[in-house]
Length: 341
Image 1: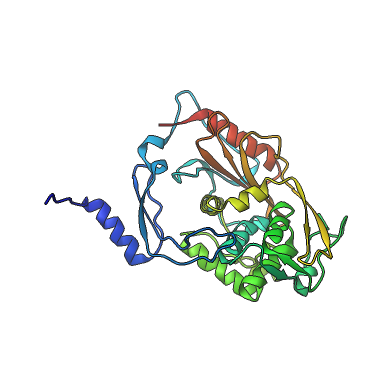
Image 2 (image 1 turned 45 degrees about the vertical axis):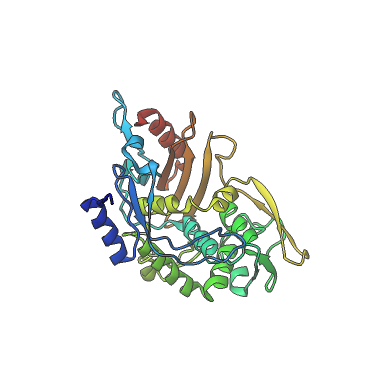
């Protein structure tokens, strides 16, 4: 009988993953990925189950797809951003970074983690969510109110039932705080318990500079407590890289306008997208905006290379008054300055 031996390096990585029960994001030069698979099967409309760690071969992490900077391209800068990063989604290799590990408020970019957990937790994306009073009276952007104090269409009503799927649209497209809060309470029973769930998930993903306080990204009334609410450009990019496995999130982000209705059809709400790059930037996968006075204007965006669409980059800027221009320049420079070999 022919004997086959597992290389010691690979075996060590497998054992490490089994012992820690966590996930391992390997270097782009390795072809074997050991990952804690937390969910199996389709998320939408099906129950999700836990499974054991698995070994999978991924071509996108092999040396064949390593991003390499071309000769002749000099330094790049995003002078208007406090923090910024450009990350290759497949390998986790940063192409550019500036203060990427600085702990910063990220405002509504928080909703990327909130909606990802909602998708992971829902047995069916069409299951009804009962809108609680504390969500309806939340501050800031809400369903029907694109900004605080300015309402243009029907708002959510206390006790109204709206599907998880429709609340995802409101939270991601219009950054509605009431939608995010409703999802959080539906999943965990309270905003605080959901924040605890977010932080546990952040630890599982290996985020070292993240601590969530609310599912919406709204700032706390207590300035001292608010200092403990933060993330970083690198951690936001890592969340986005993981969330790419959930197509429903990104299809939602790329929807320009839609109407959502209550389960019984009694109420209808108009939802607009805040993404200024929709229809203007080629191969855009999706964006998530964020703004509070403390966080400043921030943005996470994902795009594929315009030529072949084979490689995906994640760009994040935190506290950048020129965020839309900065993101476009980050993508333009990256896809011109790098090649994948």
